[in-house]
Image (cartoon, rainbow, N blue to C red; front, top):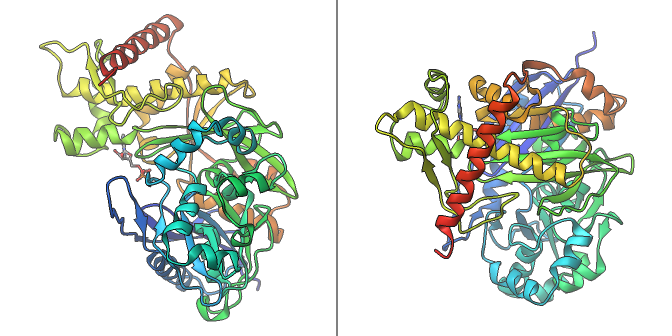
Length: 497
Ligand code: ADP
């Protein structure tokens, strides 16, 4: 009897480390998860303890593998992107906490570079914006602030990496220092055209190349796990950053296919095929995936407040007990009764990029109640999605025909119907909610030959629900016009705060 092959996906996220075992058909069999501590050493600084990242990752892998009676055939890794770890090559000892993507400590450095006119050149090479969010200035900060780091880096004694690279180093017992093209494309050091570390960028950020990992395809040979760790030497065969992995987990492998993840915030990413589109709307150009040496690109944008608007109603105002309840409360009304929420609690993202903006509610009457506020919060996430997809369309992405959704909010069927109505395109929800982990497992499956090509992902992707647009044009245009007016008024109010 031959046993069915299993694949292990490691999903190392911002708030937790998870391990998920999939069977050969991509069905999720076992999930194990451990929370991760958030460290805030100063205003705007966010760190993780790299040993905790490693220990929780190892623990969840062991826990999930203990439930199957055989070794997995391969491992795929997906991870929080941009976060940086610095360690000693000889011992694997880390020299500082990981600096997390959200960390703003290098804002002044970025401002200085921008004032010196470096942004257009950086954007042209990397597809990104000059922002502390990305890894380069975090690495520079570590070299400048960890005692002796710069001299030791120049002597080749140190290694740096995003979380995939750090985990790979630890999993292989220090044998492999590598990363994949999607993670590399979030560092501000990677030239998305040449697909290599860029010497001019390395010099601008003053980072020696000897610090950095090798860059490989997303489906590639990344070495074997040290036998002492998981009971046997398991090949590591796939790596991708979390949003890119989710794009694959949603089988968005044709140009124009979009996945949108609705968690606390929302991340939307559209496959643009082999084309490197340069955004005029401050969207990011990034590597979607690189397989067999062929790069597929994407445009990415984010909405700062999605599920967070519902969290605010629940935890801030205390007017609902659970996020789940929002579906029934919104659906009990036949219209929004003229109430609009602009949840610009931390500014507005693409296409507005207005950090000054702060939230507002419009159209309140004596009759306005909890249902209206809930509905306006859910609708606001959908209107913001329209704005984001419009920005993508203005950047000449291939025609967007459907939207594939995931994340906590995707469970809300009332909201997803409204999303389809207001976008005027179908919205598809998959049966598997673990799209990110599935993407990582799929890359490993491709490398070991369980699947022959990425096209097979499309055959395996299964729909749980499809929401067809059913709103008439006049109503949609009216709602969108009022939303636009609400955004404009919010921004006017917030000017020169
Ligand atoms: P994250 O990964 O950012 O922690 P999740 O994908 O777990 O987020 O989604 C959680 C978010 O989804 C929360 O902000 C919550 O308010 C929202 N949410 C969860 N269930 C629903 C629902 N049924 N309707 C609307 N929002 C929901």
